[in-house]
Length: 289
Image 1 (cartoon, helix red, strand yellow):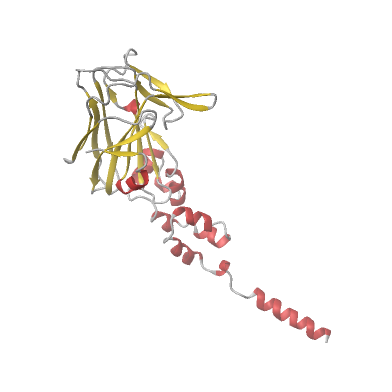
Image 2 (cartoon, one colour; image 1 turned 90 degrees about the vertical axis):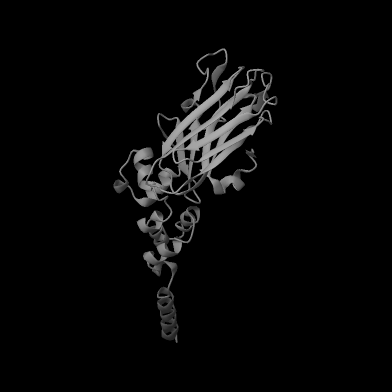
């Protein structure tokens, strides 16, 4: 009887050990399934077991998640050869904020969609009178990606102009100015905003403009508002049809009515996002006509 019981346990153990498990699924099959998931989901599933971890590193998988111009981005932004990096490593590195052009521009991939996003510092713009400390100052702040913003104390003529030449992936993009009325700081760990110098922005509207090398243009006007808070002012959209060609973009904001002074303005940056992100950003975006 004892021998029969032992044999039964042995048979049960053998059947149990031969039962299929997730580890038995070929990595190539798992990778093919992963192609239908977004990157954060893939990374979570990679923690389950060795097979999933191996499948999550397949080059053919991550190439589908990368933007079509990823080779250009690796060379331009990472200063690396695409052949020396795995596709997963490329995605991981491009998903982090990366500075280029003397650290005046920053680019990153949206981690979920792999779409290209960009921020352009005020330091890369031509701002009228920026070197005259009677009118403008560069102030340090933790509220900017670039840790400093251009602050206007007072002027008659406010004009900021920027240019960019870049190979964007195909798609439609939206351009925004990130501005704030007032100068923010911290006191006893709390955020405060000095509005003493804010004036003149409700008298006449600011004129925003956008143009591209292939003839696309956008013009909009708006009085600045909501003192003490950062606002994204939507200038316009542009479309990229050929990701193998550089797109030249010119953008500007100006309030040059010399019948009154204006002041108390922080210029942080210009942001470029895929147009489909406008819904996500709408709490921070002011659409202007």
